[in-house]
Length: 272
Image (cartoon, rainbow, N blue to C red; front, side):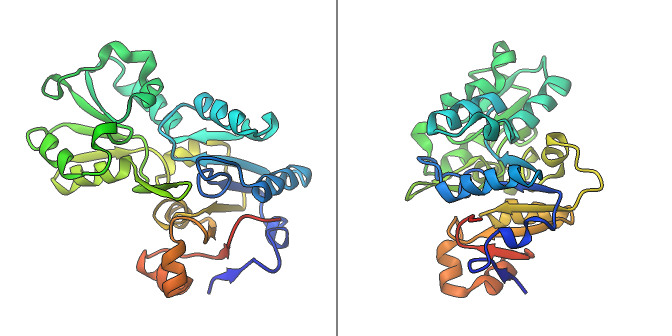
């Protein structure tokens, strides 16, 4: 049974945990502006001397996201807690694929995730050794059939996906993410290596989490909550996120069951 924290607030459970994994997009900001109550909650967590990681499926290095958050007005002592799926991907690529030719699937703004090995980028998918998916092309950001045609003769190649999210809400506009492209590739029989929630690597790279009581907070059942379930962490779903309409229509119990996810707590927005 999921407990609703809207009346008691996050403060009612904060002392029960040592470490919080907190999603950024959908919890701390909406892609355009910071959520004031969520920022206040992060400050309170620091006050009670608990650890937290702002764990995001952003396909960019940590520093790029920190700069983005600084422009939004986030204070330095908070944004220093950021860890991204892009950073986890970058660590893997440097170790195992640093000299191989790759074909980039995604917008030019994601270039910084492979800046250290940009000379290995191939503009021709046929001459690449692996596919690096950070998102969708700007001119093909709504039609997934385009990618099905693109991949048709390249299913034998491995895809590295730096963001397992299927969708994200930028303000009031819903956008497709890299995970949607990777799903197309997988359904065609291709192999995808994912970095980001719900996969364990990004959690384990971000901080020492051994023998700690952990709560994972996010608005996405497929990533934030599934990741918590897979790693036996407790979970808190922010219900005004990507599943808002589903929860309004069906309620939290039916919605979480539909996604085969276990939600320990829910809250409309992250509030202390």
